[in-house]
Image (cartoon, rainbow over the protein chains, first blue to last red):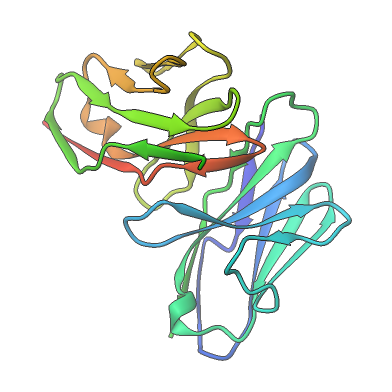
Length: 117
Length: 109
């Protein structure tokens, strides 16, 4: 149980275009989902926390107008990178917290490799 | 502040060697502690966790004990395998997860 999927796993897009990444909890309901960014050989940086039915909370330094997050249901959150630039190229990972879980455990998706040319 | 510090890698070991990856944390109160593993090109997988002092998390031969007195959660394995080659992240949680910088482990046959 506790499987989180991401789609797509890899995407290449041109500068100026927008890309949407989906994060789904497959066998549980997630009231809270998290979006992370990972640069090569570095740790994960939390970008934002999204709660179902409400606006996402962005970490300091993350542009909310550039990284649009929508958490429309208890099993789906999307991250849209708008007007992408090469510096947005990165590995994006989502995680989800099971609403039934007592602990703070998060379940991670397999990640999406974004390359902006 | 609240942070996680883990030993810098890369760590290179021969198969069947003993592994220790140090991790210390700072936090207010008593956070939950985790070790995650990331295999090449993949997302993170939870390796083990401990939610209170003196708890020992264990999985796949890996162990870590929540030491409140030293604010540590060191990861150990008695005999590593080539398949253990990955990046290991220590993390603590009091609401949100805070990750260490990761330690790359390479195990040679």
